[in-house]
Length: 136
Image (cartoon, rainbow, N blue to C red; front, side):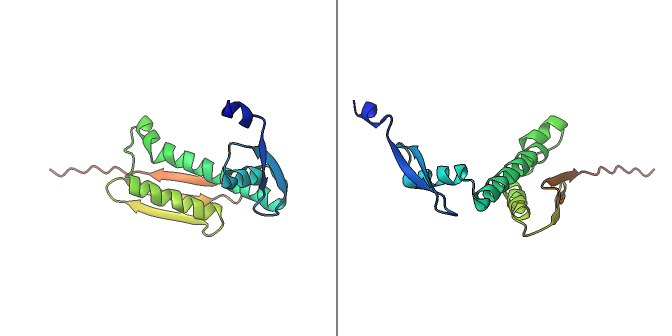
């Protein structure tokens, strides 16, 4: 009975950038309502925020494919969780415009390079070098 009464009820959420109010479902907390309102807002800052989140999402997806569990699909060893967190943070800093590129050697595994393309995307590169030498 109580759930039936809550259906169809709404609360207001406010865009965290411009304060524009949006109607959202009753079941959300105020914080969630404000986030939903921000996601739906058409102000410039909210639009920039959506693009930033999408850029970060795509970079993390690519990182998982190249350095995380997806690396095994290409016969490569996934990096440690701590290294993955570092690479994800580097991608976030890049998406936010704090750095243009990051390159690091991961001992015993590979070299990682992340670079801002200048076209709204982040290029992710993994380099592994195998050297075999014999002397007789």
